[in-house]
Image (cartoon, rainbow, N blue to C red; front, side, top):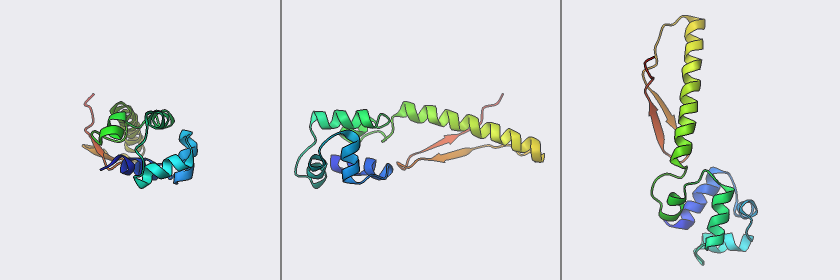
Length: 123
């Protein structure tokens, strides 16, 4: 996967067209057009502006295609928040409906096609 493909993934995940993407990162629209067409490679300023405009995007993924689109620390923090919210919701439902059912596994799927598996902590 080339860098232009990763840029398209960012644009798609934020529902941006080339013009609105250029406006968001603060570069000329022609710069984005040339990079997406493969005519030019993005320069340092372009990449720096992109990473500042999208702080959750992993620089390693952007430059190399390795890892995931979203920074792992953000995924972990977000995953913990989701896990806590799910556990609280389960406790409320169980108390309200008296089901007595216990969650044994929760799967969370992200828009970049990655996922996390949560196993509830025994307390």
